[in-house]
Each structure stands twice: as C-alpha cells, then as structure tokens.
Amino acid sequence: MHLANRDIWMWILIAVLALTGLIIWSFMRRRSIVKRVFSEGQRASLLSNFSPGARLFRTIILGLSLFFLGLAILDPRWGSQAVEREMSGIDVVFLMDISASMDTEDVPGSRLGYAKQLSQQLMSLLAGNRIGVAGYAGFGFKVIPLTADINAAILFLNELSTSMIDIQGSNLEDGIKTAMELFDKQALTHRAVVVFTDGEDYEFSPLNQAKEAKQSGVRIYTVGIGTPEGAKVPMLDQYGAVEEYMMEGGKPVISHLNEALLKSVAQETGALYAPGTEDGILQIAKSLGELQKSKFGSNIYEFMEPQYQYFLMAAVLLLLIYILMPDRKLNTRKPAVPLAALALAMLLPIGGYASDASEGAKAYKKNEYEKALQFFQKAITADPKNDLLRYNEANTYYQMKQYAPAMTGYLSLTNSKNTDAQAKAFYNLGNAFAAQKDYKNALLSYKYVLDHADPKSEVFQRALKNFVFLKQKFPPQQQKDDQKDKKDNKDQKDQQNKDKNKDQKDNQDNKEPQNEDNQKQQQAQQQKPISPTDIENLLNLIEEEEKKHLTDKEKPQGKLVYPKIKY
Image 1: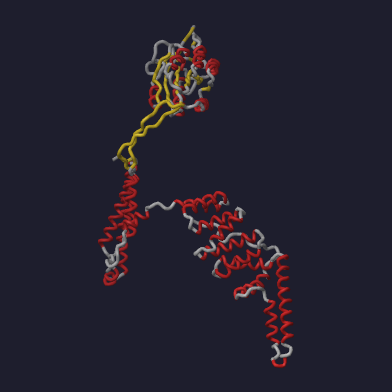
Image 2: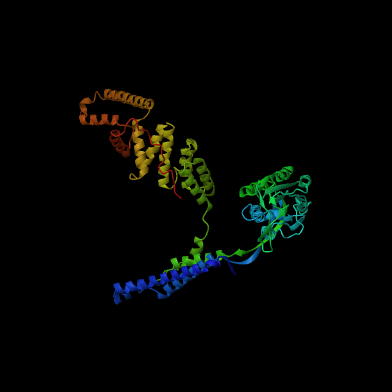
C-alpha cells in the first residue's frame, strides 16, 4: 500500500492523539464533577442505568473512526491502472549555436548560457508537443530526436558547450539542414525550427536552406542572442574561466548581433524573429500554439488507484454508530434500533429534483425568473405531485407577468390537502385577478381566504387588507350596475308590499298594527349589503374601520405572500 500524503502523517498522528486525549479528559472531568456534586447514594441512583461496557464500546468506536479518517486523509493507494492517451501537437526542433562567439558576455552570463535559459522556458510552454534538439558551429549535428519527454530534451540541451567540437565557425546553413533531418517526412504534423544564435554567419548562405525549408513546409523561427553593440570574444580554459580574448590583426575580435540576417531567414519561411527576451519567447510560443495540431501517436500512463473512499466510508459509519448508540443499558423489551441499517440509509443519495428546486429558488431570489422556471419545471417532472414545486412555478409565472399559466397553477392547488398551500394559492389567485382588473373574481378569491384561513396568519391579514381596499375602490361602472340591481330589487319588493297591503285591507281590523320597531328592522335588512354570513358582517365592520386609514393613492397589493421558498 502506498500513501500519497505520507509527508503529513506526523501531523495527522498529532491530531488523532490530541482528540483522543481531549475525549479522555472530558470523561475524567465528568466523573470528577459527578463525585463532587452528588453523594454516593445519589450517584448510585443516578448511574443505576449506566453501562460502563457501552461507554467503553462507544469510546473504541470513536477511536476507530478517527483512525480510519486519518488513513483516508493519507490517501492510500494500491493496484495499478494503465490509461492510453492519444498524443497530438506539432514537431519543433531547437537549433543551438555553440560557436566561440556564443561565449561573449554582453547579456546576463554568456550568450550560450542565456540561450539555454530561454530555450528551457520555451520548451516548458510547448509541453505536449514533440521536441528535438540539434546544434551547430563549423557544421551541424544532432543531439536528441523528437520526443514528448520535455525533461529529457532539457537534460541534453544543458550538456551543450562551445568546446564540444573542434571545427569552429558559424555554419547556420548546415545547422538548418541537420535540424530538418530530425523530422519524420511521412508525418502529417506541422513542423518548425527555433534557432538560438547571434547571427554571425559570413561564410555560408542560410537563406538558400531557408527556401528549401519553406518548400518542405517547415517554418524557421529565429531568436537573437546578444546586442548590436557587441563585446569581445573570450577564450576559455578547461574550467570555463577566461584566459584571454580572441585577437585578429593585433586587435580583439568584437562579436555583434546580426538581426538583419535572422529576420531575413524567419521572413523567408513565414515565421517571425524575436529578440532574446522573455517577451520574445512568449511571442514565439503564441505563434507556435496557433499552428494546427495533429495526432502523432499515443502514450500509456500507469498510476496507482486511490482507495481512500473505503476508509472514509468506514470512518463515517463508525461515527454514526457512536452518535446513535446510547451509553446506558438497553431496554430489552423493545426492539433494538438497527443502527447499521440506519447509518447506511443516511448515506444514500438524495433525490436529484431537490437540487433543481434549490437552484430554482436561488435564481428566483436573483430575479432570474426564466432560469428559475426551467429549474422548477425540471423538478416537477421528477416529482409531479409536489404542491410546493407547482406553487413556486405559478409564482414564477406571476413575476414574469404571464398571468394565464400562473392562474392555472394556482387553480390546480385550490384542491390541495395542504390548507396552508391552498390559502396561499387563493390569495395569489386574487392577486392575479386584480392585476388583470377582474376585481369581482379577485374579491371572491380573497373572500375564500378570509373564510378558511387562520385569522392570525399573514395570508389572512393581507387578504383582508386587499379585500377591504377593493371594496372601496370598486370600478364606478360595476358600482352603478350593483346599485341598479339593488334599486330594481327594492322597487319589486315595494310593489309586492303594495299588493299585499291591498289584499289585507279588508282584514285590517282583525290584525294588530305592525310594530314600528319591526318596520325599521325590515328596512334595515333591505339596505344591508349582499353578505348573508356572519363573517361578512364582521368584514363590513372592519371595512368601515379600514376606510379611515386608506388613502386614494393606495393600490391593491400585488406581491406574493411567500414567493421565495427555501430548500
């Protein structure tokens, strides 16, 4: 077994020991308090149902839980698994100038050392592609063939030095030719050569080789190392120390950066020239990254499979047993609770619709109603009998001012067995009617809430306020219609009374006169609003009181009672 996080095993051990010590201390402190507060007789009575064995067992269970938790954190692994992955990218050959002029120190360190540093940065940026290395001085030579192992390429690159070959010079033409020999001519990958040099080549013609590279579909990127001002070329001993400087005609040789030649080579192949800086390396990396990648093979990766989940599951299961198991004597007359089964049940995954409903509630709070509607409808598909989900869907339609589907949703909840959901549905249905200026049906919806909801509930109070306000602000046309209906009813009743009085005229002497109080009571009953129930009488009294506080600027409340449901 291999522990992936074995470096932190000491910290885990310290944490486990600290927790164990804390548990033991809490037990001892509890025992000390009991001894100090209660007498021996009281302790015997209090602890008569206490089971030392059960407490010891719970302690062992807790210790094992902490042990398995520590193992899970250490990430144990065993068994191996091989995965084959296809490799795709481009082929890039790094061509390094190791002529004597590359020892010139007009950049940080020598030119060659600085070129190695920049080339390593570029190789790191090209991870996943195939890299090859070649060098040149008086002639070109191969260092390492194309490989996806960046570390191997960097290792061989660092071994290059100006003392590797005796034939000195700066034959860039032969260097490009050698670099191109590293490419697989049958491969369909895009190919490029990146040259790190000071550009001092006055004997050969690298442009001719650049033209051939262009015909083969190879781009040549050039990186200028050094400065145009230049510096003296040193001659080094076997330890790399400067012995003297190269002389010609009695004067020290000055090596300069030849940017013109390098730009010409790069432009000939459709590539680019970059100065020897970090920004220049990033430019080349970006340009190479834009080249189309092609498959060039596959690689097999082997790794040990993580097994921490088993130890974590054991730790959680033992912890649940510790929490649920009492430290007192069990009552054998009652069936024991299946702790293991309960623990496993708690580990089962929760229904997926709960996540959709929760996301819908979050989107609703952010006023993202279209997004919330999608989540609620997805949750309803998984649980179509959930009244709460259908209520939230209707609320969302209401906020989107799509009153028809909102009212359909509220109507579907009016037969709900959940009285609270039913009352809220009727209230919001009234809001939807009021928003569409259908005040008659709005009043009927509020009236249902007032007849069935708890008077202390918030939905009752809001429905009452809306009901009273709509009563006061009823549209004039509807008021006239109601008054006309009342007048017709009154005329009809008066005519009936006249006919009745005419028929009873002959018998007037045989009957007692109608009591004046009864006549007033009958007139009062004829003038009462159409509300036959006792609740309507109560509402009319409240209405008169509410009118004192309402102003003309108030409007029916259109907000939902509980539009934002938490999950």
